[in-house]
Image 1 (cartoon, protein in one colour):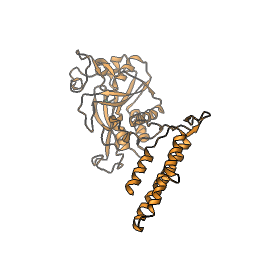
Image 2: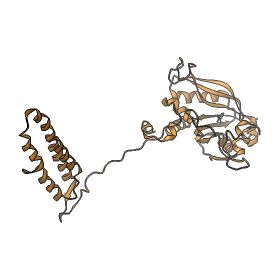
Image 3: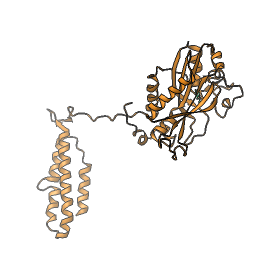
Image 4: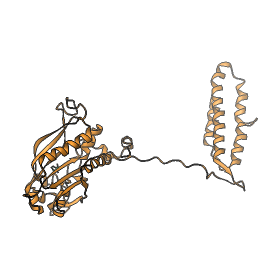
Length: 339
Ligand code: PHE
């Protein structure tokens, strides 16, 4: 009998009528006094009490399922004047699920919003650059390793056209094309010829900041970055600057924030140091000013650049960079924010 119940269940499941008449026909065949399900109830009487316990539940389930399905089918169809069946056009439509923003966009927008509060404006630059703006105007010596094939994707065989390796190319443009004061931000994609791993990718995102005016000092840079770190990672966040080298800034520094997980006590995220590196920065090198036609005796400025993936990984505790590029919905749907 269980077998028979299963067969009927399958028939009900597969039933897809095109009009009300078919639904009525089906109802008669299954649920009327002589219907197939009613017949099951007759056979049921002949079973012993043990069997009745099991089979009874199943028959009732089948009957309920069939009744529900027929009711549902009926309510989704209406009969028009000429008794042709059509869809109920007054039924509300199924709602669409809203998408979510990509975590890189969320964090990029957040970074932009922090710096625009300090008066920075967003600028734009091309991803395909010339050697001049990616390297020469930024004071890279001719034999600098960053120009090497291992790092840079060259597009032209004379190695003059390339995919920008950093958003600093935008500051090279702005300094030669705009007049100070300049206070700009340049977010965008950058490319480096690196093997793809959990910590590196051949394509990633940076955001560059540039401030040029009279009397801009290193203290201004520090204050700006301190404000950024506190807004981004929380009030208690501290920053520390370590001397570093970039061809286009002098002095240059790398900036760490107190560990976003342990707050500076030491844990496995910060490798027990209490600090996490987030960006590079420095005072614009006078050579860069001169090449751009800005008088370094009148103007000074600072620049900073950070990887958006890195900030996002720290903010959300993401361990593998590749997740950003795989477009796995199970990952992306976790970032449900209106930002
Ligand atoms: N362009 C540098 C990099 O890609 C970052 C940087 C930007 C450093 C501006 C100093 C000033 O690593």
